[in-house]
Amino acid sequence: MDTASIIQIAIVVICSYLIGSIPTGYIIVKLFTGQDIRTLGSGSTGATNVKRIMGKKWFFIVMLLDAFKGALPVILTILFGTLYKDIGLMPVIAAIFVILGHSRSIFLKFTGGKSVASGVGTLLALNWQAGLTIAVIWACITWVSKYVSLGSIIALALAPAIMWLLNAPIAYVIYSGIAALFVIWLHRENIKRLISGTENKVR
Image (cartoon, rainbow, N blue to C red; front, side):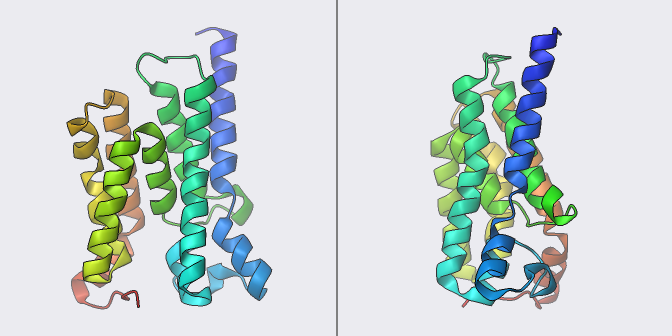
């Protein structure tokens, strides 16, 4: 691998991680309430915890901003990246580091959210049909069950199969599997609460 390739990979990794690290939910709660969202509710900086503190309107605002944050580095890499373009590897690297940044933000001492909205944003950028399908599945399960966590877990778990059925590049299918495992792992406490019947429902 030549120097130019190493530089391109480094730029994608660093920029994607830093964009992912922008703590949308933390910033909004801090600006409008003066509180640290990490000390409230579940302690997550994601949209669901923002909803508990600021209401449904802000849930959707943060969710959309996080999805955009997830999509942006992937889209930029697709448009301007030249390395491994034939197998779609560089957009996948961007996607991995943006969701890593969201859940382990350098600006919040490596805390953050559970990467659902940002993860769906990356999937929309990689393959909009797959991303839209996953978003609809999430919305339907969440609406029926009233559990955001359940909708997130099931929708992301189905992502690799949906990518594969839509004939996405193998790199995208593998990434979907990695993202699903990562998001499910971040929801491990929610899974325990779902099993015990103590998980909070959305209202």
